Length: 359
Image (cartoon, rainbow, N blue to C red; front, side, top):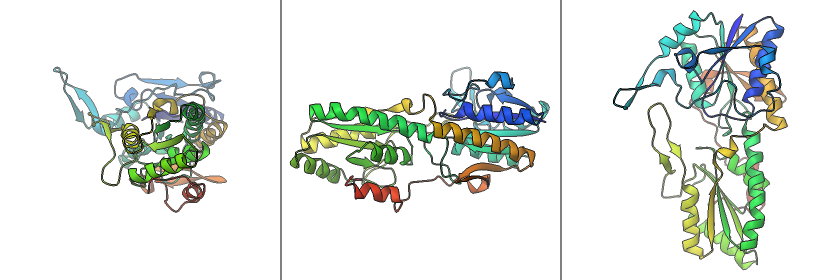
């Protein structure tokens, strides 16, 4: 059997571990594995495909990124076409992709991605492609799985950064606002904020009142705590506003969120008179070597995907359902982003610790 792997969307620590697990698991069955470069671009004339042998995936489990490359503009249903004058438009090339897939002799596709990539995988499955999905995103916003690989590493990176900000923030008696990734889900902000002893955590799921944020900072000031750490998810929004967009959607891409950290910092400075700084941690959360948890989860996902292919269980995503993995129909995953439940024990823990959530 000849199987293909695709890595699409934003990168996440653990991608190479998945690739290695797929290649080695397939090799033990006598199968051949090929990697599609840059999302689906390798089948649509961009960079081609590469043969993946055990030798080619040796020593990559601990490496960040993906040896196949990835892109946020690789949707075959909205393929970006650039005209001679430089303008861009979108074209449905999904039929071209399906034809190229079959012409290459592939018998199964393992698609590694977040909600957007899994939606593409589902649509390709509806066109007849034998697809198995693997959930990948640092945002942890994919339904049907307790965790996505990459999330634990992103939380660890954010926690370490916030830990380091404590000393400088306290030394200068400032307020430090840290903006974290996550889009419309507050998983990274919530987990790293609690772990790093933040004083305020603002989540996309809970519209915040800047007056209540400032009240927390003033209360700390009156108690002799002359510094504060505020963690903000990039999709957080005030009670009377919307999430901020740094860059509107270009052809083939989604809106780029950002700027809420600076807005919150200005509001705090104006209302409290405290010296306030803001920091966007940005793509540091995507980089680096995956944690032990993410490595193991990624390896398990890859091996389980190959087992699903062997059972001809297509149109599913491999989900993490401790202590086991499950095959979740893709149709039950797409269009249902996983948000932070407001009654979850993690949210209740934050409140019990005295952390303000801005409400």
